[in-house]
Length: 220
Length: 263
Image (cartoon, rainbow over the protein chains, first blue to last red):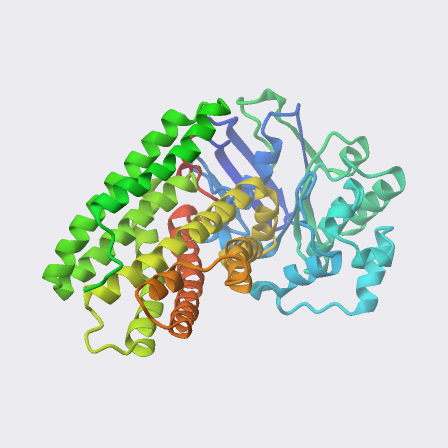
């Protein structure tokens, strides 16, 4: 691969709360790279994704993010450079507008003030009607929630994006928008948990975690 | 000194009124007779015991002993709150104790020092009953507040983690949970404040009237104690959540599972 900055370097990481689900994980991601994590449900894909932003920080093995070792102290600032979209996100019950404003009101995010126009452009890009801003997050469909959950990361221009099953609740048209966004965001890097064939095509590397606790590592 | 003092004989005779509820329980076969008798005996023994040692404390009336007694009441409240909120004593007891003391002292100082403006504010006659009323009323609010706070984070951990991942500081991510649990803890107290006197004559007022004071004096006492209770409730609940949270999360921001009592 071309010589570009390494964003993620995972070495001998164990993932899982009580008993480790995954052990000896090794992987790396360079700037602009797109890494797909695949494997049967319950194999620890989602836990691995969260472990990359220190939720929780590694008890065994290590994660280096943006050249900095991830631990309880560095996790807080490193999370301010990443965008994470969970599977079936829980956005609470406030209005979509209030949800977005809340995320942007965090001290770390206070420099971002999207105009109403930027907001509605972004909404329509994701095929979300602008009237949705006034709706309660609790009333959104699964697919709408998934797309709304991506918006903060885009507004904040996060360069490293971790997406957990991002297509699981999307219809075909919205999936196309997602593919298009990933395909065009050359300055962004992605780690994506998915079985989706379209995403697999976009990825420049796929790691199969079905080997469970075995060495799932490669990716240089 | 008082012609309306209760004598043991009078009370014993009066307890015959319990034949009414007991026969109702017996007659309707609720199966509660044994439990009721036990509860009554417990109540009587506990209160007699309290009467004895309060009599002793009032007699000695040493400021340090009075303060110590207030701390004992706070410690008992501490244990009761944690047990009832399903939280582990060992981890959080010290912080909750500190929160109770921090939250109860200001209303106590204002009630006794400013409103009553007595010469001897550390006198057992003021400190212990007023402190006990404020603490006792904080109990329920703290149970509701702490349980709601930690349980809702556990149940909606995804939402909490999302906010952490989006760059929130610990308290930025916790703010909605804090707001919701304070609302749940305060609203019963606010409802009580709003309806007091309409539904029932509250305890302190009744006490002051029975002691022979004018009803208007009793009302002023009641207003003062309700303000003290609300102040104590608000301060202890906020302090309790803020202080216990320091031990309830890992350094990377995750909720510790071992703060909950195993079900």
